[in-house]
Amino acid sequence: MTRVVILGCGYVGCELARQLQPDYEVVGVRRSEAGLRTVEDTGATAVKADVTEAETLAAVPDADWVVFAASSGGRDADAARETYVEGLRTAVDHFCDRGTVPDRIVYTSSTGVYGDRDGDWVDEGTPIDPETERGQVLMEAEQIARQRPIDDTDGTVARFAGLYGPDRYRLDRYLDGPVTEGHLNMVHRDDAAGAVRFLLDGDHARRDVVNVVDDEPVSKWDFADWLARQCDEPAPAKQTIAERLDDPDLSDAARNWIGADKRVSNTKLRELGYDFEYSTYRAGYRDAIETQCG
Image 1: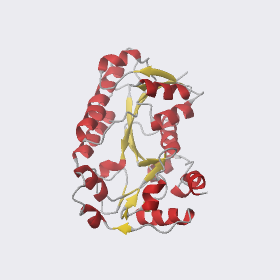
Image 2 (image 1 turned 135 degrees about the vertical axis):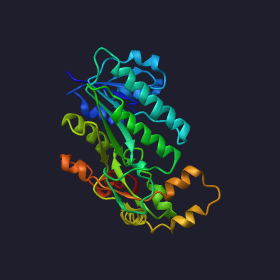
Image 3 (image 1 turned 45 degrees about the horizontal axis):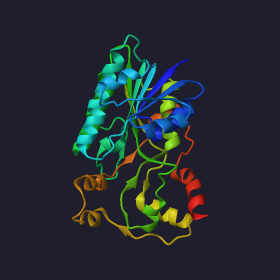
């Protein structure tokens, strides 16, 4: 049976573990005891290791497929570099140096690498030139995923849009306002995991990049107004990007995130044949609205 090792088996990784079973043998890797218990709850085998500590990876069994979904645990560039660049490089070198090497390595990146495009559409063919240090880190990690594996191992980059789903709907953020202008590019957790399984199952996107985002990027203002109508609440207050950036207490990271406006296309993923469970936010937020707003 094909064995899949998920490094950083967290929010998306645990859902991927659930979706892969029982067709595949799944090993979920976490660095904390609490994380290991979460992996065990999926039915997968839990192994304690840390991608930033090479010696701990010896505890992880050989893999046919490796999914690198580790989180930096923080938003600053130094934490990101330690996990996404150094950790990914360590993991790739470790598994590719074994007697049995993986056939595929999938790295879960972010559509944040596109930076600010003034609300224009971007796709996998759009050149990336991140303006922030964190974006540069993500770009470097993508290069490692696609170029560093040996000839017998192919790397794939899955660029996730903003994740939402159970425990991450954050309705109050939009209902309470004020809501800053710009666009939301989103993907439900179940589709983020489903797309990774699809790419592996179908042998798609070897040494390639695929955006994992739903069908309908939406204006933040339009989304907030739609959500308010669904919950029978008044429309929240709005503010422009310039008004939001006037706040002197904003961190540099927050300023860069607020100013990064684009719409991300999923045409490539669709053309490969992926069928979304939640093709737009309207379907994806239905359960949350019914639960929170009645």
